[in-house]
Structure formats: structure tokens, C-alpha cells
Image (cartoon, rainbow, N blue to C red):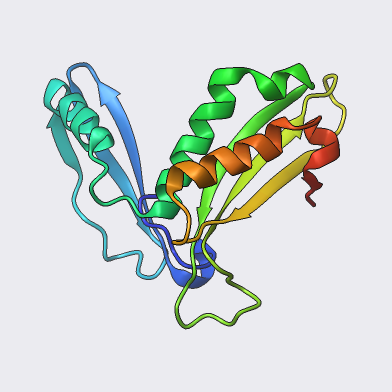
Length: 167
């Protein structure tokens, strides 16, 4: 999915593409559009080396990042680099920015924030338990202070005890 709808893809439309590498070429093909299956772009071919160089350039460019994105990115790096969750038999599943969505009712959206999802690793076939830390992102504090605050909260205790079970 290369678009990010405000709600679910089935209700708010989404654009999908299959990206694959074939030799020294990268192909974008097999497009899908949930709002109009006939309105899809043509397939694209890119030189693989140029494609990789552009991906590296774009991923290093933080100019369009909002504070909520920066907090999410930094929070994803800190626990992954520390091995903290593994100590407790857990795995970091995802770190996601949460945005206010203008025009949506308050019950669907909330103030900007970050959700950190972890799950407990179990034996093969056993149910895994999902957990979530959530934090608001505010303009009153620096991004670095907000990352520090949530990291301290996450690392204060066993995540199976300090995070909320999420179902």
C-alpha cells in the first residue's frame, strides 16, 4: 500500500503496487486502486542502482518530518538498539505515529501521539500477548525530551507489567 488513508483502506480508498527487483531493474507493477480499479498508473521500470541511491537519499531527508514522526522514528531506534524487550521475552512489533484527523469524530481520532507495540514471544503454536505503550506528542516539550520520557517509562520495568495489554 503506497497511500495511507485516514481510516481503513476498504472505506477510505488505497493505492497498492507490487515492487520487485529483476536483475538490475526495479519494477512497480500490478497496481490496485480500491476506489476505482480502472484508474491505475502504468507499470514502471527503474535502473536498480539509481533506485537504491534515491531510496537512500529520500530516507535520509527529514525535512518533511513532523514532531510526531521524529518521536516515532527515534523511539523505534532506541529499544531496538538496546535489546531491552528481548530481556523480558518480548519483541518490538512496531512504532507508529498517531495523528489528529481533521473532520473525524473525536472517538475515532485523538491528539497526536506515538504508539509502541510489543508482543511476548511464546513457544511455537502458543498465543502471543500484544502490549502497547502510548504517549501524546506536544509542542510544549522538545522532541528529545519526549523521546527520553517515554524511553524511561518503557525501560522502568518489565513491559509485560508496565505496558497495557492490547486486544
